Length: 100
Image (cartoon, rainbow, N blue to C red):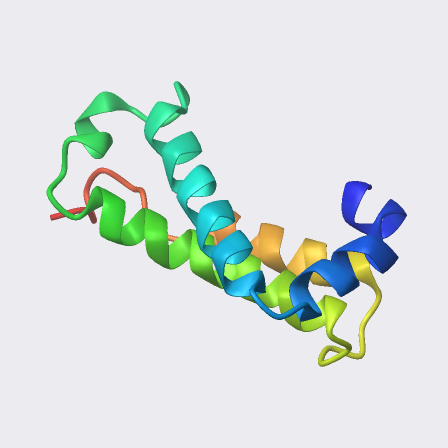
């Protein structure tokens, strides 16, 4: 796991002054990835609120890992990742019938 293997470097990166720019860029990259992901149907990507949902999802994931790196979550990384995975799997954020 990249985060586990590089946690010391990532902890310094997110705690450093100016890390906000890095985290904002990471969020943009994540949202761009969602927009280019071929597994997400075009009909969903064309919904007016697709990118709002994408930013919400990306921000939540990035913030959760940032909290783990900062020591705010007293759980192993594997458990944090599993909870995130469960949330994504059960979300209605990108289900066609839910997107308006």
